[in-house]
Length: 345
Image (tube, rainbow, N blue to C red):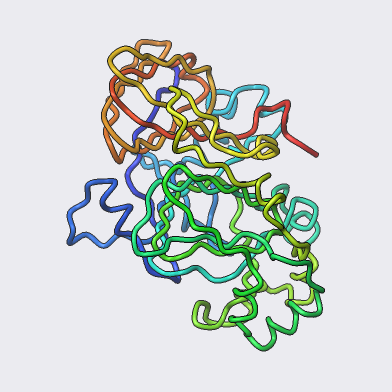
């Protein structure tokens, strides 16, 4: 029996920060329903140190993670399995920052393998799909090269003004995307709503822990900050270098827009798809996560399946669905793991 796309309800594990109104608005939830700031879509990843929090449950009651492991070729395709095993290779979130997030960073694959026994670190990317408030911003990378000793001192003292002041401060609007390589220090500002793509882990090393986390241990994940900071990129990111990770796509009216900066395709892929009465898009077989930003449409599969799409819907699409066709008047973000031939290391 072939697999078909599955519409997924919200999946919102508890978080330490405020937000969620933009997720509720996108999904058309009633105002009295409390939405958290993160919605983990088609997740086979747990929160750090937890057994099931974060995992997506399918309508039949099974965890998506278990379903994929039981039929990896059907869900992911044989070439993906050969390159990445039975991991989906991808975690997608809707993230609505109701307050500025703390300054933090993520380990690369090598560090994660050594310290967390994981094949994956946590490179990520943000697709800005909404903003609110007077001055929505993101904070990617240090403006000037710093010593690790300086950052260690700020961390010990919890000198937040110095930490935040050292970061680039970039105004954003819908259509902007930011690729965050592992190691890059960063924060997302209040009022920024993103579709976030990540490697499938929950390794966040948080140097600004006070007022956010219960203890410093939760900031360094048990490693100690001296060890954690070994994974931190303390090099300077000037405007030219930032230009290699930031894209402004709002003015691109093509039916298919490649959203992320070059280099990110080794970790994940993201496209914006737009259909209208005259445009039908044909999509190649692939494991994918769909987030419908606006409009409505129909996703037809190679095997005759028809699935209605509407604003706020999230779908997981298995490789087994084959060649699919998107029609209607919809704007959809399609998130995918790296092509098997792109997967590094």
